[in-house]
Length: 303
Image (cartoon, rainbow, N blue to C red):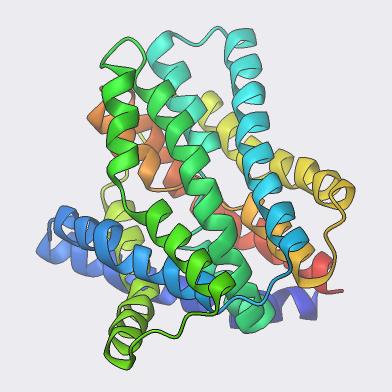
């Protein structure tokens, strides 16, 4: 119990102190999160992805393993979500919102700082690699399920391809493998931008949680939260073990796979006329419940 409380206090609470302050600011001053979101997506997060991969000393097998877990979890969550929503006879709009709520995992805003606090700088670098893969896979699936029947899937996927995160990660991989030395001004500029990304992502999480509402059907809400926080780690453990991941790489793969619903789910649901109220509620409830589930999970992984 003492270890669990220590994890909650020293690993989880710093994140929620920041998020909580932003929620209070948002409730009082009502800032528009779209400006911050745009800067994060097109500048800060690509810089973080680039820097994280340039500085990574992971072996090829570890990178492939992390990528395989990220892709596998996205696909399996989609299959689980389809099965549960059909058995529960959700209408099409709720089904789409349910699916993106369990596919889109908060591997960045919450996952990257959490892995740094839990496992140190190596944990942060590996979390960045997991995030890059999960955001590419999760965004494509999320866009597809959010937009089916409401917008052109082709146009939506093309919009995903316009986001520079994947290109920044590829550039970082080239620089890493080719052992290219960046010009000092470029290196310092990208470093400053990457350092700004985690505070920016936590601020965005707080702004989006401040908008969340709980006036939704509780049965599907609890189902989505349970799948995201309880079933996901139960699937991730054997998957990571079968792929031969060990040490910090194994720990990060499990924790990132077990994160709550991403704020991106709400953005996609809003954009493509899915049930945005439901996705925002799942994001709020799963994020709060994760204080307990992730503390237990980290205690198991580090015990």
